[in-house]
Length: 366
Ligand code: HEM
Image 1 (cartoon, protein in one colour):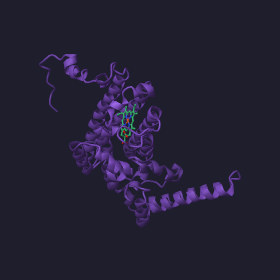
Image 2 (cartoon, protein in one colour):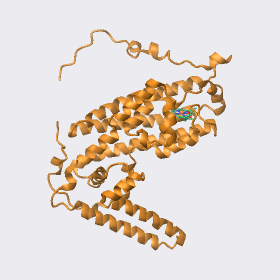
Image 3 (cartoon, protein in one colour):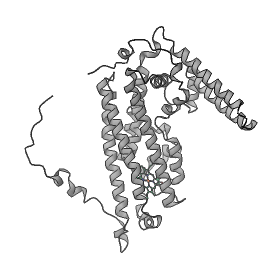
Image 4 (cartoon, helix red, strand yellow):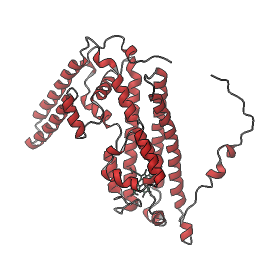
């Protein structure tokens, strides 16, 4: 590592932060069209700009995480870096969620003082937001229909081409999947993990069925309904071990991750107390945190939009809060990681791990 040089020119706060440009970048448009500028337009601009700044930081972290994931094996050092940066993204997201309540101090009537001047601009055109989505793994094929077509039509050519190029790059979802697939532990000789695991989950699901059957508070109709749900869970679980069934369920949208990577994630979750799996587990947990926080932001934004514009359409031409509600439900990144909790079994039922697993995980220091 080279020694750090001393600074040669004195640093001045305002110059270093380019505050001249930065604080001269808020220009409400309402003053151009009406006698008095709408008081709340400044808040609207500042909140959006603050979002965009934090998006820039999130992208900075995401790009460095993707770079670490390019390596064929993650070392203990890169795990540490990735987890710390994912945690930073999560911290920023929490702040972004809180900012919504500041914007909500603007009433719908105050918003109407300048809303019409914004047409047809819209959050749709936040390229950094879309970059974050794409880099995390929300590519076109996984978006809701309106998002697949109409959204791209609302961008200028440069932005559209830029996002289309990004779609071609491996996302964090792709990298995660490769990493999980590379884990060799599922195939160790004399290791009966899959058999023991399958038996334990089968028993757990059977006992759930008994609970439903013996629950006197449930009507026959309720029981039939719950049993149907259990059957579905069972067939999803069976698919984890059956390539054809897995492929069919993936086509129907029940899984997104490959079968092997999903099993890898299940394995890490089950053995997370082992030293070799603590960092991989933390990594998966951070991704779950980020997905959850994103979903919470979408929901908060949807409810705020409902409050601000009721059932009106958006300035970007979507159906407004109804469109946003659908994206909250659908536009997820790591849903498979949430769903595996269905198949977790108690620690007491876990088969013993064979030795030297940490070696095969490549968990060595740099
Ligand atoms: C008065 C406040 C706000 C209103 C009424 C509002 C309204 C809307 C509406 C209706 C849409 C759907 C697209 C459309 O038809 O325009 C949308 C999308 C969006 N808005 Fe907002 N918004 C507000 C504040 C914000 C803020 C503070 C941000 C922060 C960056 C933001 C970011 C976005 C993003 C990223 C989308 C695209 C979401 C997606 O396509 O999944 N919005 N907004």
